[in-house]
Amino acid sequence: MLTINEGENKSFRVLIKHVEEKKGTKNIYVNVTFTDGEAELSANAWCPASEFPYAGQVADITLVMKSGYVNIKSAIPVPTEDSSKYLRHAPINPESGMSMIYRYISEMNDMDLKTITEYLIKQNEDNFKRWSAAKSVHHNYLNGLLYHICRMIANVKNLSSVYALNKDLLMSAAILHDIGKLKELKMDELGSAEYTIEGNLYGHLYLGAIMVKEACRACMVNETSQNIQLLIHMILSHHGKMEYGAVKSPATREAYALHILDELDSKLWVYEDVMKNTEPGTFSQPNRWLDGAVVYNSDVDLNSH
Ligand SMILES: [Fe+2]
Ligand SMILES: [Fe+2]
Image 1 (tube, rainbow, N blue to C red):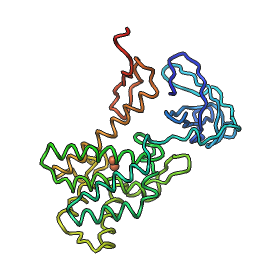
Image 2 (cartoon, rainbow, N blue to C red):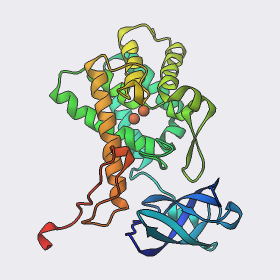
Image 3 (cartoon, rainbow, N blue to C red):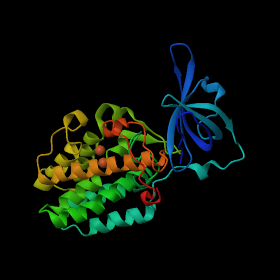
Image 4 (cartoon, rainbow, N blue to C red):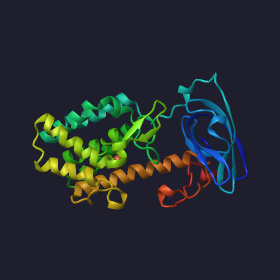
């Protein structure tokens, strides 16, 4: 937990993930992202990058919170500490996650969707199981993409038993909807993600749609068959609205369901993540990824008050 309250000075042993030198109106400062292995935080330190520990180092940092802002007061490297202990992973065993995905693929009846889904996952398995799902915001750590997909496909199973949906289509799209992130992002060994050139230029919806089309050609699957066209539509529309990067608005029940499941999982992840930086029984600062909502850490026994 990396929690700090107004007026406090607090020290933590952390892994420095990213250090970016910036120029303020008067001084040079660094924006630093760091993790204790569970929570992650970004804060500024008022010194040039040459005077700050570098990414990959473990350091003892002292934070101070004033007027709602967290700053780094000091950072002292701890070269004797094993940095791998502080790497931030999704709470999932990558091998179990992959077997869950393969099990659901094996249950598909539609041969076109089954072939394409299996081909793309097998082709990209090594990256798929270790990739981060984002540069920031949701599931942005090692194995984050796999964790996001596994939570979504568990929901597809339940949703398809309640609503009359094309389960194979929804399952295939849930597995593949973010596959374009393998090209949109590159990752370093600390789990930090950066946008690639094609990621910046095209985004993962378009890149994912292209990957499906290429897979159709490689597997001799007719890319104009209805389910493949609907799958591509779902990848292109899963952000829901064009202002959030969707190429089209969801035009089918399955596309709408995929969008809602994606939104649900990413927003719940943000709540979970903010709680890691919020003391039990207290509220967070307004969170811009939750439309300014403050998050209450409800992991507290209310009966004890
Ligand atoms: Fe996405
Ligand atoms: Fe997603």
